[in-house]
Length: 348
Image 1 (cartoon, rainbow, N blue to C red):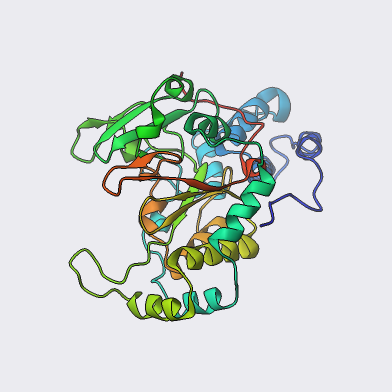
Image 2 (tube, rainbow, N blue to C red; image 1 turned 90 degrees about the horizontal axis):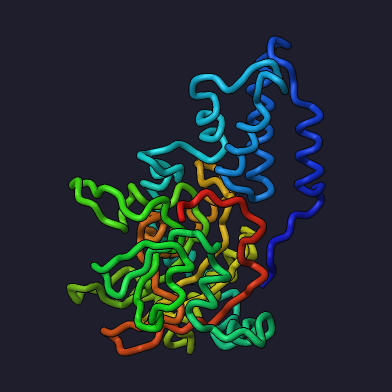
């Protein structure tokens, strides 16, 4: 699977130098300072720098000394919202745009799967080629996925959630953990909708996505034993010798090829599905953004859109699923697709 590299673009440092050389002076008409702020924020998103990094850049340079005035009123947050999407509560993730995702289209899913012969076996082979000497011990993985002060929320079961800086997890028995919130939390606990303090809630969830986990949880029957819309599709795959896992890897490969968002890791859920971790750091998810289009297509192909919620549990990589008595194995890992060179604002 290809990884993403910016092509045809100057380096980020050169782009920042160009921006600083062109910063306008207030009073020059046509809201030039505001337009420059939008250009600077857009450049940060284009180069996959985060909303917080764009905020720090604008705070440093929109000053009376540089452009004749400082930031006024809601200028800063309005500017960031234009690029990264609107806010609900304390998070910068565009929940409103994520409230209605396209319905699954099994015929389109079958069409994509039929076009490929990709499989879990091939995916494992690619992982071995990318990281032949890397041992998938849980904390070793976490160090690749997060920065040291990142507030990582992990659970030993669905109802037990603890948030603490990554480095505090080092000496814990992570092999027994079952769940993790993919993107770092903003604080150790927050208020639920019922006003209770809890580590895993939207009030404490990520301001920006770091990871987006895609899961195709195809089943013949639902929890009540009734046939799902996927039953005929799965039966056709079975006649063709295509497993649900192989179908899922073909859909994931399609998403990578079509949208050029790097895939860093695939985790076996310990059940019937795979959790695919995409590096979306710095990508706004406002309507019509590339990330929003990626998420919309994933929804049409049948992914579980609950994982689009930033506080939602994902399966802990290398952990254990007691109900199935099975390890949540990492079957693919690409260290080159992990974020790096970041500015961090998380509490310690």
